[in-house]
Amino acid sequence: MNNDLLNILSNSNKDIDNQKLMDYINGKLSELEKNEVEQQMVDNNFVNDALEGLKNIKDKKNLPAYIDQLNKTLQAQVERKKERREKRRLKEYPWIYFAIILILVLCIVAYAVIRQYIH
Image (cartoon, rainbow, N blue to C red):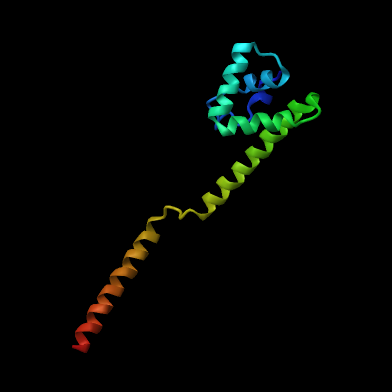
């Protein structure tokens, strides 16, 4: 199987190898390896959900195409979130910090002068 197709959630799921998931679904694992995967399913709800979802796919021939599409969609969503977060982030311009500090100082001085004038 193409290694690019096995990258599904590879950065977020370090507990189980993607090839092992695919081999489990296709019934290519030994009994010992099956037991290891099933133990991980018990310990990790994410692995359990992933395998349940993969098992529900009726056409196993298109499974690599589904995985590839999931990878592309997930990558696009992550990129969009990253871009939005970057746009919202206050750019590091020193004049903005200077202006904020200047306004705060002027407000404090104005408060002190008004308070002095009133008393």
